[in-house]
Image 1: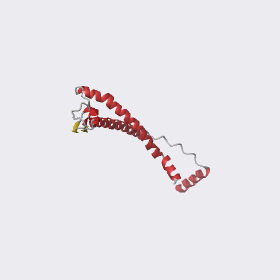
Image 2: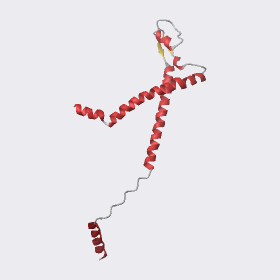
Image 3: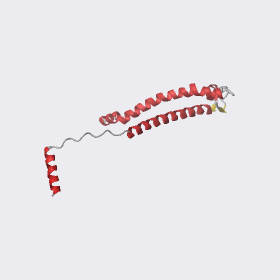
Image 4: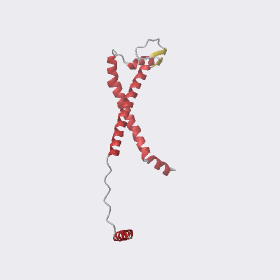
Length: 146
């Protein structure tokens, strides 16, 4: 059983999947940073300095009555909130990630098409026929002439 597990775990496709998950997690952090640190501040500036992460609706007040200035203050008070600003940020994050993955797949598919379209190398020259083959060819040709 250990041997079978070892063969499964070391199989190429399983290792490729593990590497993909690790790289995907690191890539996700990069995309999060791009969205939160680069894109959302520009969007907030364009909308008059509104911070999307603090867009929420209080469904039920917590230990202290609202209104709460920030989502962190609402959570600290134990309020139940509907956090649509965070959802918006995550949705933008997803769209950027999906677009980047689309562009990567598109580039890979273009490379694959170019490889398929490239002409196959010419076949190697056939070896010279042996003495027996040459003799049999002569006999065939003589019989064909009769």
